[in-house]
Length: 274
Image 1 (cartoon, rainbow, N blue to C red):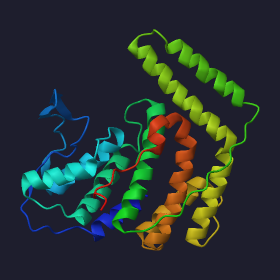
Image 2 (image 1 turned 180 degrees about the vertical axis):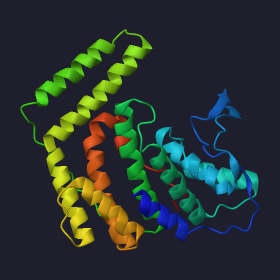
Image 3 (image 1 turned 180 degrees about the horizontal axis):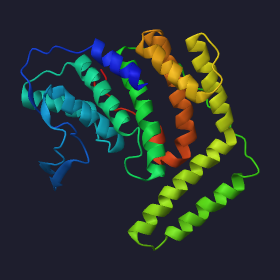
Image 4 (image 1 turned 60 degrees about the vertical axis):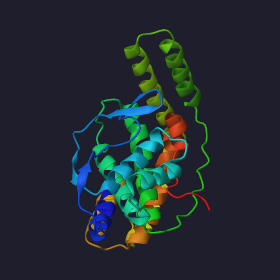
């Protein structure tokens, strides 16, 4: 997926007429400071650089998935009115692919040390990257039909552990609560994988085999072969994106109980309805 996104980014670099500006590089809710109803500051400047101002709006869009704003499209209109600068929506879609790719690369490793958070983050951000690429290319992705999970003899065991972790977290210190919540996310994911993880792997192998035009029999080799095919231009962009849409949708279904509200979150609209 990263190979596909990087190739697309290199092939579609915009050439804006306006001069570069100071770009924050991670702007949006979570890095805004407020006093009452007024924004008073912007923190976390380690990714700042000279660049396209629409990159910061793309970060704002990305961060609004985690911390939604009341009306993102109206906020963009307010930006246009205040700045006197018209937003090129297609250029904004390019930068949305860029910032999402960057997050997927950063989150490819468990940077927080908490595997539960990593499960949620990896699933969410890969799904967002597929959506960002599809929007930028105006491609309608196929609707995902969820796999029907089947309880196993271990399901009640997982459920019991999650319940005990929830009880343990009550009235405990912040550190204990964080540990319990993280462990519960892992248990929920393992429970899902126990129910239909084998089906996910089988479908993933079938999808990749179909895209490559050759049978692959193990998931690690399949991923390597797919990455090489994309890097060499051996598969078409749209066909690859549709395959990734299925793969990330299955991953999202596995991670859904661990993800809570994030399981259904997506990019906010960037244009107002007419």
